[in-house]
Structure formats: C-alpha cells, structure tokens
Amino acid sequence: MTSYLEQIDKTRLPKHIAIIMDGNGRWAKAQGLDRSYGHKKGVDSVRTVTEAATEIGIKYLTLYTFSTENWNRPQEEIDALMALMVMAIERETPDLIKNGVRLQAIGNLSRMPEEVRQRLDKCISDTAQGTGVTLVLALSYSSRWEIVDAVKKISSKVSSGEISVDNITEDTISQSLTTKNIPDPDLLIRTGGEERISNFLMWQISYSELYFTPEYWPDFGKESLYKAICNYQSRERRFGKTSEQL
Image (cartoon, rainbow, N blue to C red):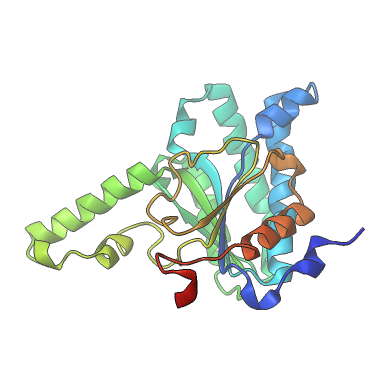
C-alpha cells in the first residue's frame, strides 16, 4: 500500500501544525476501558506524531493538551491527567533531546500544580538547544483567556504611557499573546469527529487551513498526519487575494 508520505511535496510543507487532540475518553469507552487508559494511549500518539513531524521537517507542532475548561472535569480525572503529565514529561525528555525536539509551553501555567510546573520547566530547559521541531504544549490554555490577558498587558502599557492607543496594531496584539515568538499555524487538525475550534488559538488561526477527522486521537498515527498534510497541499491558500494574483 502506498504511503501518503510519498505524495507529500517537501517544498510546500506547513511550517506550523496545531492539533486539537480529541477522543481519548471516547476511544477508551469504545474499548470498554476507563477514560484514564485513553489518555495513556493518547501520550503514545503524541510521541508518534512528534516523531513523524520531526522526520518530515515540520518546524512547529502545537498540541492542545489541557484547556482552562478541563479544570471543570471530575477531580479524579484531573488528578490522573496531572500524574500522567509528570510521568510523560520525564519519560519523554531523553528522546526529545536525542531527536532535537525543543519543548515550549503556552497557557495560564500558574494554575498548574507546582510539581508539574517544575518538571515541565526542567524539560523546557533541557531541550532548549534542540534545532528540530518545536513542540508547543498548550496547558491550562484557552484563546479567550489569552486575549483577555493580552488586553490587560496592552492596557497597562497605555496607562504607563509606554504606547498610545493610536499605535496599537495587529502586531501589538500578536506580540502580547503567549505565542508571540511562534508563527501562526498553517494547518489546524482536530481529531475525534467534532468540527469546532473549542477556544483554541482563535487569533492565530485566522488564515489556517482546517482539517477534521473522525479518528480518535489514540488512533491518529504517522499516516494520519501525512494524509492531513496531503489534504493541506491540495488547497489553494489565497489570503484574501484571487487565484490569478497568486
């Protein structure tokens, strides 16, 4: 069977892919298993997709790991997710370093448990010299929270006289977001069959190509990623222009 990898034009790769990893719980339920087992399998998919992105030459991969809304889930599930996060971060760090992956995190990280933050900070520090894919974990993240936070930062600068209202531009807002040093996503993927954005990178995905798949995240592998990239490359990205202008 021909791999989608063979169909990809390596000269037109998306620089940044963002993924809403959905369906861990439903995958587990379909297997007659506890939701926590679905999250564990989801970690395996993170490793697989990161490897695929590294091998093909994607520069940035952002994963919606834990939203601010997820804090409303049952405490038992939150505790299990946090424990899994600590374990996964420590277990994966050596491979991230070996593969040149640089880890970053965005979101309201002050809400994360201290132990998780400390281990996350260590992994970020340990992988800082990576020159391959930048893996961005969106933790305790939501786009509305991020935009409100950006408005507060800009308002503070206006109040202090650092900038004037008339000088506020789109770039002012972009540079006030948690993604300020990260290019906007070219491709947004959502697994699990839902077709909505769910408060994720709403400013940044203004011109992103959207790709929805019914596959649950634990089933999303290398071929799934390659298929999404092929779909992306079949589209014409006009950014408001006509086809003739491109």
